[in-house]
Image (spheres, helix red, strand yellow):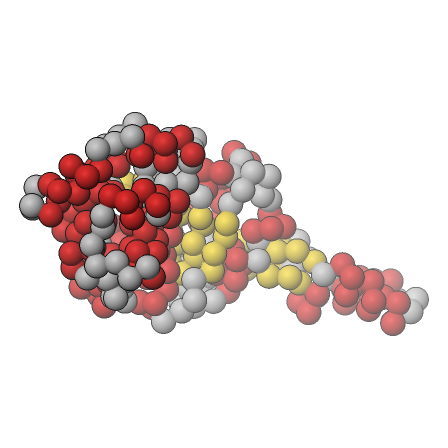
Length: 284
């Protein structure tokens, strides 16, 4: 599984590859938690490439409900249809406007009706408790009931990846339904490999410089420690500037690509970056 994921551009460690394999074999949702920027969302995109489908993404937020996640009715089209038909038989008219042509399909329903499919439920920790309960019900049976149309059941369960940045604890009931994996920041060598894979124009030396300094920044008391996504963004910016190595002056000037809080940038500017980079150059 690690080799298959690498073929589609995702470098997974053995633990994550094992979790993905079991999720596919057991047809269970995979719940991945971790700091922002460690590759949780990218995992679902990689699974889509692996299966040859475009992942269906449900971005969670506070207040999200059934109509945003499952389905809705196209009210303007229903009204136009009723005006065009005229008075007619009320019962027939009602059946017409609540038929499939007037249904707006959202990611959850699309995932149940499509085979194969990959469903990404992104940042579930941002949703409300009620939505969690609704999602648990859907993932337990892989079916939903639309009052006007009946019950829709997935012929083949979709591959489901739920992500969480742990801004709050997700209820145990939902976690019990899923396989769970905590995504750590990668090792130094793996991060270098990821950066070089995602930014092929970067030199080996530049990728190692960036990975080393980002590793040092993660050990600092920052509001938002940089993830792999920031390492990639930083490397892209440095390559765009023609850099072959990361020097202290360039590091300070491009901190906005890796640290997104003013307080963190001030903290990093006060570090002894010349000494840290010197240790990197010497292989420290």
